[in-house]
Image 1: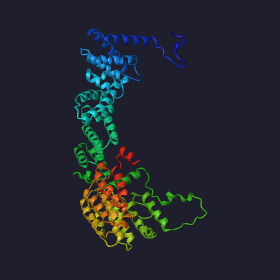
Image 2: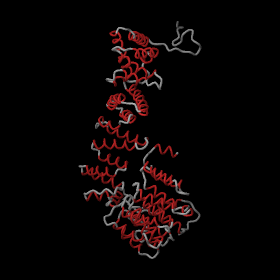
Image 3: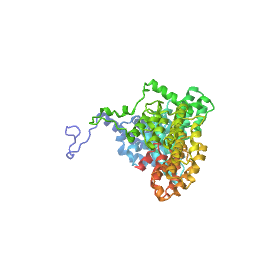
Amino acid sequence: VRDGKKGKSKGKKKGEVETELSDEDLQIKEDLELLVERIHDENEGLQAAALASLEEKIRTSTSSMTSVPKPLKFLRPHYEGIKKLADSNQGSNRKAICDIVAVLSMTMAKDDDRDALKYKLMGSQENIGQWGHEFLRHLSKEIAQEFVQRSEAGSPVDDLLSLVEQIVPFNMTHHAEHEACDLLMEVEQLDTIHAHVTDTNYRRVCLYLETCAQYVPEPEDTDIFKVVLAILQRMGQHTDSLIVALRMGNTEEAEKILESCADEGVKKQLAYILGRQRMFMIEPEDDELLDIVGNANLSEHFLSLGRELDVMETKTPEDIYKSHLMESRFNTKVDSARKNLSDTFVNAFVNAGFCQDKLMVDDGAKWVYRNKGHGMMSASASLGMVLQWDVLNGINELDKFTHMKDEHVRAGALLGVGILNCGVRNECDPALALLSEFVDDENMNLRVGAILGLGLAYAGTRREDLQEILAPLLDSPDLPMELLGLVCLSLGLIFCGTCNGDLSMNIIEALMAREETDLKSTYTRFACLGLGLLYFGRQEEVEVTLETVKTLNFVDKYACITLETCAYAGTGNVLKVQEML
């Protein structure tokens, strides 16, 4: 008996509240209870009519679920009874009863029972999407759990895959592509998604899969990228296909994509992408495309952009320092070697590629001799950065410094040649012709400039002729650690990301042959970095070398960290980031 106050009943303890049902809810509850009573009836005709009515009420309430639907809420007390009926009933209505139990189990079954999947497999498997997104989402979770358990036990999974074949098309046509992808990845059937991808949903599918690739272990990430690549190629998206191929490190596939493109404009765009990624090993037959991939006109394009943006005005180190804004009691200018060295670096970076500055281009000899020792080497090398990519004019300017008497100036000019040619392919190979003759020079500084210059000039080119020039140096037991470190670094730059087994073993053996005092040299770090660059972005392919490096004395920990960092650099591998943290 109610006391007149809404929501409270006599006989209840203080603080206990019972929600009063509205007339509408009360009617729904009574109708459902009547239907439950009738489905227990032995008359199959009456039972079928009750099941059809009950199915309609549940189906319409679960098609769009923002809270627990009222039918599911009111049927909670009857769940176990309907479940027992489904287990015991052997009549023609059994499948319909099992369908009802499968839907009710969403909110009533225990987490580990997987009743939704169990009874759905016992029930009707037609038009599974009529029960709504939430039921399919719940069913997909149980399918994934069951698939893992059966796979480990070696049991067949055909019945699970038949459900997947119904769920995936529904999700793909109802803007739930991410759920379809998740389910297919869980049951190891991602390849089948091709049949459901259209020109209206492929972008969402590819974007989601590319993101997922960062969160899965190897080699699953590569498998995902292969699926994405196949989808993009089928849709004629050459640019996106090329980017995915480059992320996979698949040079052969990248070359095929370039060749298969029929549109000349898009083909040039692909060539510019390859040039930006320094994929010089790809050599198109068309001369214009060959120049684009080789960045032959990079300097011209860069200067054209500078003029367009109106940033061609030459800058000086003072424009960066703005020392006139600093208050000081002393206004005298100090012409120290250290300040001149800092001016050299600032000038090189702020005017890089603009082919003009106020220190080196017009009369660099004066500025070079205002420095000392390695400062002179840095000054003459900085000219290569100012003139970067303009190979023809740059070589002529740097050639003047290669004939000067001071060894530091000449060494800097050799290094400048390397910087000048970095990222540009030239059919005349001026860097190789000029630098190779100094690799075995008696002068230490000239060898440093030549070796490091070759590494910078041909970074990423994977040229075997350079391996024949530099690799034999590693076999020399008398090679100073400074040169050993720079040789390894240059080889790492040239063969970046190639997993070159011969070079990696050469570097490791060269380190193993060294004494403890040699390995404690700071140049040992350059050798480790060079080794790491060989596996740049190659992820699990570094594992064998990683185990070998652990046998090195004194540098094993640093070498392992460097190798792992380089191997997973730029991959976005979240699992490896978590491991490192």
